Length: 139
Image (cartoon, rainbow, N blue to C red; front, side, top):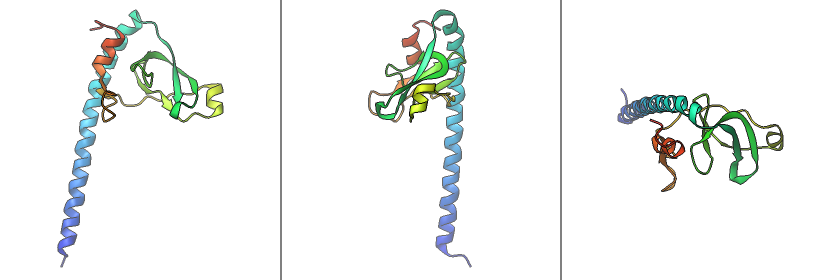
C-alpha cells in the first residue's frame, strides 16, 4: 500500500514537470516571434544603417574586448546587440587578459520580446521599441 505522502509527492512532481514544459513552450513561441522581428529589421538595417564591430564588456566593468560580430547595439548601455546575421547577442561576459587582447567569439542567444525583462524598473525595453530607437520608421 502506498503512503498518502507518496501520492502527494508524485502529484507535485508531475505538476512541476508540466509547469516547466508549459514555460518552455511559451519561451519558444516568444523566441520565434522575436527572431521573425529581428530578421525583418536586419534586412532593412543592412541597407540603411552602418554596422560596427560589437564590443563585449567584462562583468562589473572589468575590461572590454572586441568581438567577431558586426552589427548594432540594441540598448544604450551596449549590453546586447544584433548582428548583421540577424542573431541576438549578449555583450557582457567574464573577460580574461587573453580575451581583452585577442578578442572574443560570440555565440547567439535566443532573443526575447522584451530586453531586460525581470530586471530593475526602467531597465527593460520592448524589442520593437529598441529597434525603432535604432532606426526610426524601419517598418
